Length: 152
Image 1 (spheres, rainbow, N blue to C red):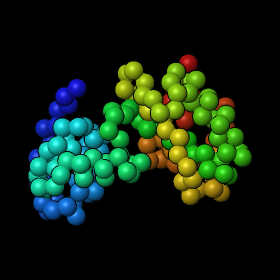
Image 2: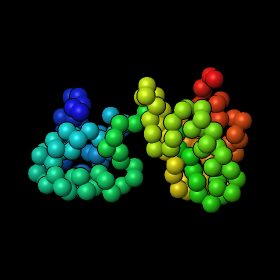
Image 3: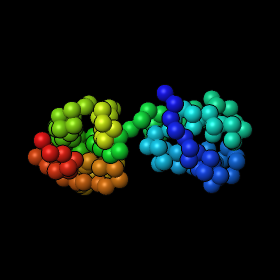
């Protein structure tokens, strides 16, 4: 599936045309499109004069990058030890039920993606759910719908 990558030239122009810029460029592409379209990988490789295989390897090595479209809102459920012990699995299940999708999936309307992540370094706030970039600590199953702002 082709994706409109019209802002890619602007992103590429903000960075030096060298291999050292690759991660920063991929971060900017991800921020702009909420994932990295395949066409952007090809264009980036060409612009930096590096093999497409190198761009692909970097974009798949780091968990922060996604090559599949993600929702406008990324819901991350921490499953590190402290969060796990304090009920992260039940919270994940409640989020999945509220949104009608499983972890790793995106709602059909493109509004939400659920991701399970390892420790986010906020153990004192366990269990932690991150709604886009906003951390929510001591999350309770009963507070999930409010956290998602879902009316059901």
